Structures are given as C-alpha cells and as structure tokens.
Length: 393
Image (cartoon, rainbow, N blue to C red; front, side, top):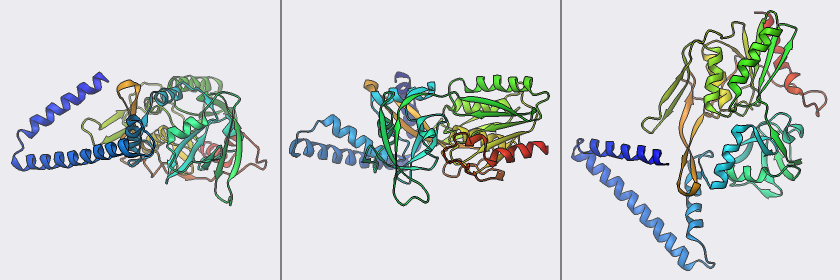
C-alpha cells in the first residue's frame, strides 16, 4: 500500500508541475472538474447523513459506504469489485491450485451469472455443467444482481457439504436443478498423452504458479517417448485462464521472438508489451491448439499469440472473449479493489475483449453417445481434426 501511495504522490506532483505550464484555459477546465466532483461528493454526504438520522432502522455508516462503493463499481463492469479482507484472501487461493468448492469459473455476462468453464474432474464437471450455462439460482436464491465475489462465496465451502444450482442453457424451457457435493479442488494444470506413437497431446487445465515449468517438462518427456515427435496438440478447451505471467511464459516456450501480448489502459504507465525470447529449445514440430467457448483470458492470450505468429493452427470454436486486465489495489484494514485497468491485445492488434479468438479451422463439439461420458475432451471430433491436420503436415 505504501508503494502504491508513493506512486500516487509522484503522479500528483507530475500533474501539478504540468498544470503550472499549460495556461489559463486548462486551469479553468480543471477547476470546473474539481467543482463538479465536489458538488457530487457533497450530495453523497448529504444523503448519507439523512439516511443515518431518519431511516426506520439504525444503520452503520460503514455498511452504507461499502454498499455505495459496491454500487459504484458495479456500474463499471462485472470484474471490478470491492474486496473485504475475507474476499481478498479467497482471491489468493485460486492460484495455488487447491481450494474447497464445486470447480467452476464464473463471470457476469449480459447481467446474468454465467459459467465460463467447469474445471476437469471436479463436481461441476462430472455433473455435466457446461461452458455458457446460466446460473439463475443458488440454493433457491435468485442470482439477479449478484456480484462474482458473492457468487464465489456461495459456491465455495467445506468438503462434503452440498449446494444446489439452477441453470438455464440452450433448448431448456425450465431451469435444471443440479445438486453438487463440494470437494477439495486440486487442479493439476498439465496432462499428457501420446497418439499413434508420434503425436503428443498436452492438456493445459489452467494457468497456475508452476504451469510453464510443468509444460517444459511435459514437452521434454513427450520428445523422449515419441521417436520422433511429429506433431503436438495443445488443448486449451474449457481452460478459464489464470495467471498472466504464466500465459506469457507458456507462449514464450513456443516462440523465438516477437510480441506475445500488448496491454493498453487509460492510466499513464499501464501500456506494456510482453516479448518472446529465443531460448533455443522451442518445439520444431507442427503445433495445433484446440479452443472452444470455454477458453478464456490467459488461454486466449496463448491462442492469440501462437495464431498471430503462425506458430500453431487453431481448431475448434470461438473463444470466450475475456480480455480485460484486473489490477488488485490494496486498501487500509486488509480490504482491496479489484479494478479493470486495461485490455489485452494480440500481437497483430486484435482486442480479445468480447471478440474472443476465432479458430483457423472451425469444428463443433460432437456430444458423446453416452451423455454421462466424462472423457469427451479426448473423444470429440475437434481432437480427431487436430490429429488429421498434423498427419498431413
């Protein structure tokens, strides 16, 4: 927090120095802005005072102010939220790959709580919850106007406890009730297989603290087992994302040079670019990347980078389109703001936000004959198309 305040103080000094030189017109503009902000803050304090003195029940000013902050952030976008100390700690849990819950990544899409993707081998995945499902109720309570952090709090809980979600999806006329038994979610980010002796398959489930290092080991293992390795399939389907640095490192494993991702924001100093480095061990075999509507955020950064540099052919369906950057800004008393501060752009300048990444080869998911089949990620025709594509190289 001290570092953040220090940066803020430096920024204020720079602004003051600039204002001293820009002339009368700019000074009038700044004064007008200040007066407008002051009037609005005065209105806020007046309403706060009236509520505290006249509301039918006694209310605490802290609760009112936090409610106002939540309303202010909700007017921005679904990913900007106020974090209580409890929520702040909960947010840090995700990156460790171990937590108690049902195993789904969620977002607010068109004002509706929506599943980005289920995490493999978790209660939600095994129960058949799918990317794009809309969660309309949790334990009988409507999710209308719920925030992401409120939903996370409701869905997570001790191992062995139950939670019931009501979901809507295409072709359903009434919500489908699904009762899930919470489990300890342990996410193993990398899984591998070999097909036809010479084709490696790597499944990246999410981007955690060790994903890039585990991926390097997985590629080395496949190169040892497959003699030679004629092609590589990187499966990013239903990967909800995770840590940005890991997405950059994973992309760098395949690239020798060039931009991996650009980050552009409104605040000074937010714009940046991540560049690939030639480490001399990049895979030389043809690469196919599998994507679908459940591939989001960090997954889209990797898919976009490899597609833009023509290092891989993307097969599947358009990705989710979650391309905004959230910055965690610690506050006093252990609270924090998670604020959207920038957007991701692919190396060729495409915005990921709302657009997603379009595959080079569009292939729709074919449902397995047995609706309870849980290994569909390895059995559908997207994987078959990937293998066929590699064999023709």
